[in-house]
Image 1 (cartoon, rainbow over the protein chains, first blue to last red):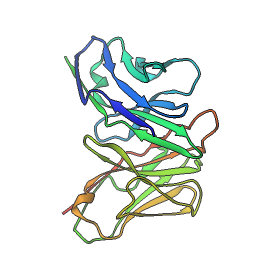
Image 2: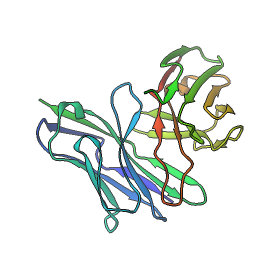
Image 3: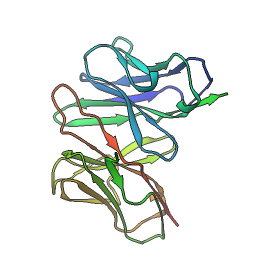
Image 4: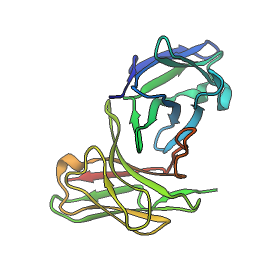
Length: 114
Length: 116
């Protein structure tokens, strides 16, 4: 069975400080891992994707994530938060078990203070 | 640059009404999906389709049906709307997955349905 746990429902940072959004996963098979972002009243947009190539994945808008198999984690980071980063972020796991199965985390809402 | 279009952004319906949510994609994607999004629950899959006239139940299909008569269009139908179906509905599409990993989902902007 597979699952995704986003460890924080809300994260608040000040503009210019680092961002860390945590995600742990459980999967019996080699997973593909994604981070999506959702701005208010918008659909989800892909930030980055891991599919068994480099373990450090760079995405859009300065975000990156590191796949750590031993820790079953895929945390999202950004060195310096911007006001426009305020949004909800979803960690997503997909495995191919004879058909693709996709599980979404519950989401982490990021607040950025001026 | 619009790729996945959901026809209605906001709808208000009464209990027992039939509701149609339409989704159209212009990327020639094989796969299309309907998700429901509720606070604290993330996205839950209602139905998906890998091809025209093909449909598969997702995790929460009860109370919903779908139709895919053309490759680019995937409709979600609530035969008799109920208050517990008040939610945000998101349509997505993707290319058929490959052995190297699943393909990216492209989402529409969402349809917020309120059932009174």
